[in-house]
Image 1 (cartoon, one colour):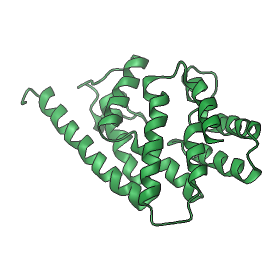
Image 2 (image 1 turned 180 degrees about the vertical axis):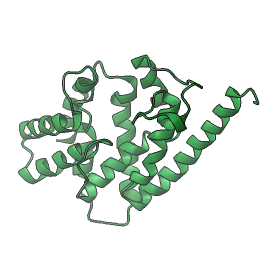
Image 3 (image 1 turned 135 degrees about the vertical axis):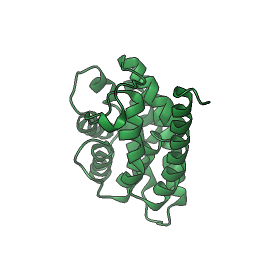
Length: 211
């Protein structure tokens, strides 16, 4: 079942943004495996975690091109259809769908199961560290948004996501460690966030001409 679902899920990423392509899914899968391995609980259904990772962003490309409003909600429905096609049992389908609905940073669905918390943590970890920085600027460039604007300092930026990609890192990315649901997720997030802060310090020094 896992390989079949993986193959089906990958078909949804043909025209995906570099920030949300199939490589992102593969990284989240690796991170989820790390989180599962390091988590003290022995009751984790790692099959549910893996299925949810494969399916969590199947709607992302559609949202990016404006075809749908919420890729998590749409993706949960699509995940259910895919899992029904491979004869998954109802409990597995329900648990995977909850993981998909709850993974998104900006929605109001809190993960209620350990599997959903692990998927959310793995997805958020890929938005931190060196990879996270690369994804921010890749996505901003694709949208044609400014990388940095000294006329819009973070303190005066009233937008939710940040008027520039530099501001987005401050306003959204550095907030991710507070959104981790597991201790192991928080440990990895702290290390990755420290690297992001080092990057911003270096960025500020170069902009000022000091480095």
